[in-house]
Length: 159
Length: 338
Image 1 (spheres, each protein chain N blue to C red):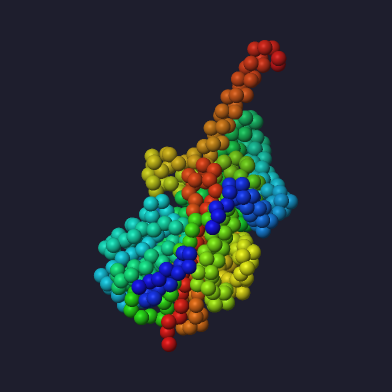
Image 2: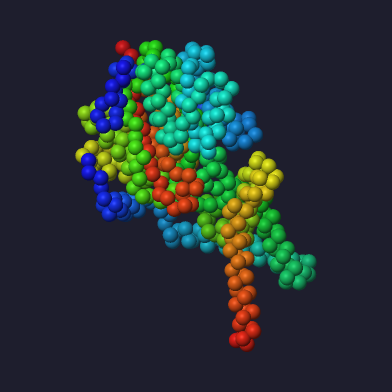
């Protein structure tokens, strides 16, 4: 049997992948967006309620109220992750559950629970940021870059 | 002695027999359409162990022990074990079967390992190297997710083409003594790569390999699809099944009437939220043991081609941008009663 050339093979793979794309079902985008909107909206409304409660009932200033709001949402997310309820919200609501701070909390809590069996150091210690790590690293890196840009712009008197 | 036929197949002139089999599964599989057929459904998916990996080891040990009992054999009567799982360095197999004290061949063929184990076990018996051997494979949803994807509690949305790893282990005792089901032949498969890079669409990655092995089997044995009562693939799921039928049609074989996929059978995809179906090297093994072998034993099926399919990826190869090659091993099972 003659070996197919590299070009022939690539063409065959290309054809196959187009065919695969045709037959592979995907989540319908408008429905998904609507579900994400509802889920994210509910989470943010809860956040707003906590914020209002902290400001109005406890008389906290906006900064302190904001901190309490974040902490409460993170705590609720970690609790619901431990009870295995948060993944259900994400299964239904997609990015609506992933993008708010609660999604970030989930991505740290989940590895902590899973890798506990591998020990405090090599399990939880090494693996707790396996999902959130890139966000933290590149988040800090990007803010550092922006900081330099800001500093340069001020030094040159542009802003 | 066994005979090599065609380009890559084997026809045993003294075929080994499947003397017994056993299936042990988790709760979700127990709630599925085949639930009542399995030998043991675990009360919880930890099977009384501390970790998911130990739970999977226990699955294998339970399945093996149960299969020995059904064949009326003591473990001393079994000469070799051919076993495998999906975890790195085959830890579920090693830690599960170590206590049995039987010489062990640890195998890795991703989800096709059930086929690989059955073929090698058959060759050992047909070649006269052993009277009785065991073929056993397992997978566990939680240990597989942890190794290949995300921690269980991590919130993400699974694509519709994704499959759900079966928690279960299937064990098969093969021997030279006459039984009701014989392994008449086999078509070991090649690793086939069509450049699929989506690890959440394993059906598409494996369908070309399944097509290649089934095509080779039909040509090598000079058979038509109708010569089989069933052609059973391992875990292509709904997406992979559609592609397989299409690919084989292009090559001139229409298997749509006789095709069945263990991954589609094992779950109710709508009710159980499993998307394209089940997967894992426990999927094909427990379905063969619980749903297919009983029909072969009573002659309801006369001849079945069992083709477990595997996606040969690791998180390293995936992260380094490699595609996902597939592999499929064909095992010809025949009714041998009368």
